[in-house]
Structures are given as structure tokens and as C-alpha cells.
Image (cartoon, rainbow, N blue to C red):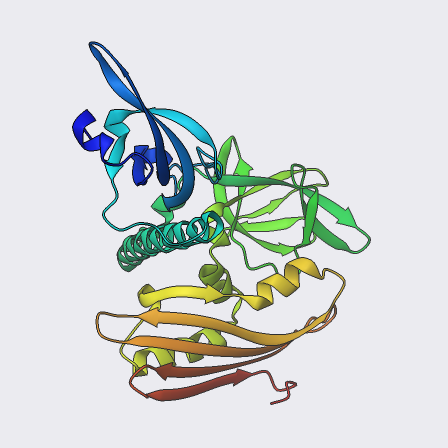
Length: 319
């Protein structure tokens, strides 16, 4: 705003534009002019039009408080075509709501893009590249009759009994994929059995912490086939998974002493035309000296109204 125009706005509302630090409304109280020097304005802050956009680490503080008197360069003062009728608090709330909507929309776009990339990598069997060289290291710890993996950083332990993860063990200086068999015995992909000991180190690739991958690894082969049968009937596959709420994993990790679990997992899938939701009803009873009792029922529903039901249960399970 130039000096001539500014004179017409003395005592009236103006817009203060601080770019990334937000836009504010204020009353132009006074013009400060000196020869051969850009003019400045003394203003009293009355509202917030645009909340600061600097949100990288935490919510940015407002540059000004209500009724604060400040001097700003004339180039930052602009006409306000429609006076702000809200109080300072009301305008702050409105600006925060607008910022909330903007950030949420940006995050939704990023989430959709990331989900699409992960889906495409999954189709070509290369999803592991997302988590490449990203490992968590554990020590083997024997407690009573059970063997645990212990995270020294987080001070957390997890029983290896029925653990669905694929580990890596170091053999002759090289890490090799392996599965836990029993006691301190692990078996590599070449059917080589490796005997470890208390305090030995094993590691996990973080890609296995994906809730959907954990779920499919946990399912017994017939249960996994029941899931895949339902997906096939709807014309989709694992590569179309979008989101997985794995409540069974949550229960397993938070209740090491419990031997029985039941609940529902929610899994969503999508292709270019249709959304799908799967409700996975499960029951688990962990037995030390016998096969575990399991029950899995998958209820498939598409947004077009298609429905499919598949079930797997051991002979001891109850429907």
C-alpha cells in the first residue's frame, strides 16, 4: 500500500501479510513517514486471517497477540476489502480450522500416494525395498520353559512360541533368513538347522512389522487359503490391500501371559473401481503340549453390495 492510499485507512481495518508467519487484521493507528525512507505503520492487531504455515516440527506460534501494538513496513500493509467481524479468538479458531483442513488434505494425498507405491511394489514382489537395510536386533533369553527375544533398546520381550516372524541368524559371518523351530533351534531356507544359545543375537527386517504382513504370516495355511479364496471370488488379491487393523497382534504384544485371544481384525482393499472391507473374526488358544486351537472367519463386503463368507477352524474350535 502506498502512502496516499494508506492515509485513507488510518483508523480502519487493514491486512498485515507476514507470508509464512500468517496474515492478520489490524487497525492502522498511525503512519510513520520520514524523507527518502519507506513508510511504516503503527497498527493494533485485531484478528487472524491465515494461520502460520510453518508446521514442520510443531505448531508455529502466532506472531502477534490480541491488541498488540506493532510497527510494520508499509509494504506488508494491504487494504482489507471486507472488514473482519469476528473477535480475535473467533478468527484464531477459524484460521486453525482452515489450517487443519489443509494439512489433513495434504496428508491424505501423501498417504494415498504412498499406499499406491507400496501396492505397486507388492505386485512385483519388491515391497521389501521400502524397508531395505532396516533391521531390529534382539537377544535370545530363556525364561523358565519359554524362549524370548529381548530388545535392549526398548526393554521389551516377546515369546518365540508361535512367533510368525522370519528371523535372520548369523552363520559364518553372514546373515541368513531362518524360522524358529524350538528351544534354541532355527532353520534356514536351505533346511539347515542352527543351534544358538542364551544371549545370541537375531534380527528382524522392519518390513515384517507391517500389520497386514504379520497377519498373513500368522494365519495357518488353510486359514490363509480361506482368505485368498474370498479375495479371488471378488477379483482382488493381497496386492490390493490398503489398510489393516491387526487387533490380534495388539493383544499378543500386550498380554504375554494370556493364552486365549478373540476379536476382529479390519482389512480394507481397493482397486480402481471398488472398495472392499474384510472383517476377520478370530479365536486363538495357545497350548504348550498340543496344537493351538484356532478359528478364523472372513466376512467380505464390497461397496457395491457383494458379500462373501469363508471360514477355517481346527477340529477343537467353536463357531
